[in-house]
Length: 427
Image 1 (tube, rainbow, N blue to C red):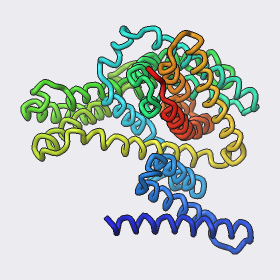
Image 2: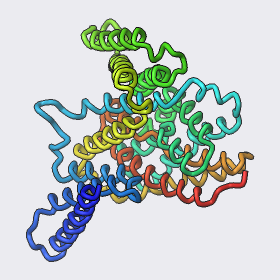
Image 3: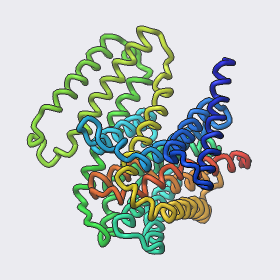
Image 4: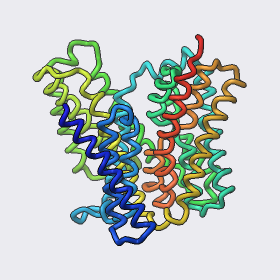
């Protein structure tokens, strides 16, 4: 343990040394490689955050800076590997992240809307009005070119992200309301997101309503449904969910079906051919979850919460990779509009929190529910927006806004959650 602490302390000094050398190079031109120093500084700091209890919550943001640094300094690192263009990994990565989100949900999270219809309706209404229109206003105010402006409207038109549930918990909010809002807004996103994009951004870039709707079903809804099935396998109370005679056939059946669908001619799917990758990823991941539960929980008698420990790492890695892929393809454009986009993301996010809270209070929600709605409104599903920008809009420039807005939302959400946690509400 002492050696590990010394190793992490060494990372702190490596970070400081790299920053000092970088400053000296920029100020006095001493000839050291700037790019290499930036990468060393960001990587060592990210590793240090992972080992420091006080900074562990910032590790994800630190790794985002690592991926952005590498993508800006060496774009080919996120370009093509062994002849394979990494942009084709974006959809499977998003589907995997959404599958993970599905494993944290249950049917109760959707049906809970019956128990608290008004707060859910208020949150849903504000989610799909405040953020899209504020995004459009900021895009016009800053005079961004059409593709980048469409990306800002797109991130505002997406449902809440799963990170909002964690922020609501840290803020002492109504976690059940947050989860239900995320679930419901995501469930209705195949209709709401294309509609808002067609209405608000249709003059900026061509928007195909049906193509976007099917793409959302493929990237988001199908993996989440598969995740709901996995949730029942992982956490179902029925004894059969832990039985070998249930888990083994399920695992083998799903894996066989998943690999089998790969070789089915897409033409057989007809107009639903776009859902093929979602079905493949869903089947394979359900099969893997069933097999891992059999091995880890039933045979090795490992911890029952192994999925909870795995998901954050998988999600963090996937999001960092997605941001790196987008940044590498728009590095030159990012140099010219990066600061303005950062300012736009801060304003968009802050206005979302502010209007989300005060409009909720105006609509008679209590303080705890208003805080929850504010977080849910202010934090969008950046991965979904990035995927739609690349897959439907076919534009890396349109994906720039989600790539910048996403990490900032996690930073600002953490700050807001910590602030509200220090100011508890008397229930």
